[in-house]
Length: 615
Ligand code: X8Z
Ligand code: ZN
Image (spheres, rainbow, N blue to C red):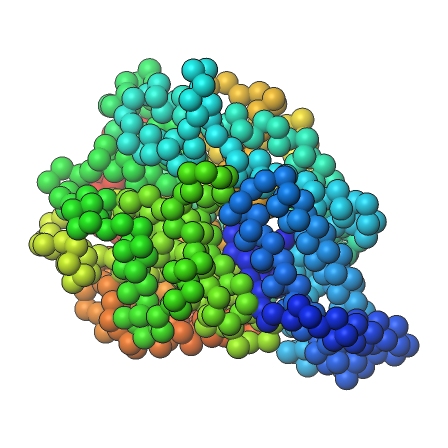
């Protein structure tokens, strides 16, 4: 339903030229399209004119849709929900029509470029809808309602006081009180219970749409977007996860032992999955917030970015300017003034907004924005880099044809800002005046541990979300097992468990933004592998002689130029080729990640000696 550029999602919406008063032009476009696809024997010339006529139509639709989505997620009310549903419905109808028209060229001999553009069009929708107009409208309403339910979600206690997700997340990050964390964990999961029937119906509807487009189900369509056969892509994920799993298992073992020391073996048994509320994060997806519980003795770097930001009076805008400064140091042009005028940086007190961070490109020119309820923490400083990575990518590919105004694959979009954040080293923090003294190498282990708690811990979560969704789409997971299956996968991949009994009146997947938001999640798994490949390659290009975990590409115009070369390509080439532009190799490979964390792996092996690991 929502597509990102050519596959808009709620996370990053982008569009292009303002053509609001071009009714006649739109009619022309449509008539070209209709005459093109009803001809008897289609030729490449027909494809070329179809693609040319479709382009301005898409640009217009994307702009309209982005505006409505921007307003809805900045101001969640019944009215904006209704307007968002209306435009989504219109966009979906049009995209289904275009995908169907594009499929008419399936048997026509075409250049690789024209074939690629048509394929992009066929795969553009994240949530295809059935052709039946009433069903499309029903689906659009569900999509808006699910998003709104999440965005408005808060936890209200019996005394009448309510907490936002941001407030609850702060408690999860800083509290070391078992019951207090549990209250937050349980409280937030109340918001998603009402989503279940909506979600169930959404799956039925979108699968019907996917089948009409020739896919087995919507999950099969999602897996078809990676320049390789869908089954090969799924196998590729398993292969890469197999590379990382031993490191994850070591980290899990060590963290569980430390949590068991902290909370007691009755609460954290040494042979069982870890209770999911003790890891410093609402979803146990990244664990950096409990770094203090696992910090290696004598190797703690002795600083904390949250404290440094406070000490140097960094407010939200200063945090964003700081992150922007990294990109400009690489040679990227500064963000436009409108970015600062139009972005949302702080949570408004007087209305409901979707606080989950996102980056937007409204017009494929220069109307870039982020929307984020920034908290003044080191964690959020990283998220700002993440979001700006989206914006700089969007600007880099803006001159591509609309079909290619996208990242090489969705994992690339998620990896760019994170790649930059890997260069936020102590040395860099000193250069920008946040840190006085760079800790010596004896403290590297602490830095690596902190990074692993964020990045390595995330990887199985990044995989399991869509393992759940794919099986929901395929029907292997039935509605009566939605929650149970979620927890089975959480246990299988992450080795975490629900801290209290769950039932099928709960809908815990819905408490994670990307499920009601319908944002595919495999992208983050990919990004967590790719960012280490990019970082290593860019450090080489920058001529760094440091260990890779100490390298910062700050100020390297060479690294910036190479990165930009890849970003500018958009999705015009298979992602393997884009990857090769920066890394020299067309394969996704976790070796760069494993090399980065090699000293930590040695430490963990030592620490885990005699422990019974696994769950
Ligand atoms: O959703 C995001 C970004 C926006 S694309 C803030 N991330 C995932 C999440 O929060 O679950 C970044 C890492 C994973
Ligand atoms: Zn992102």
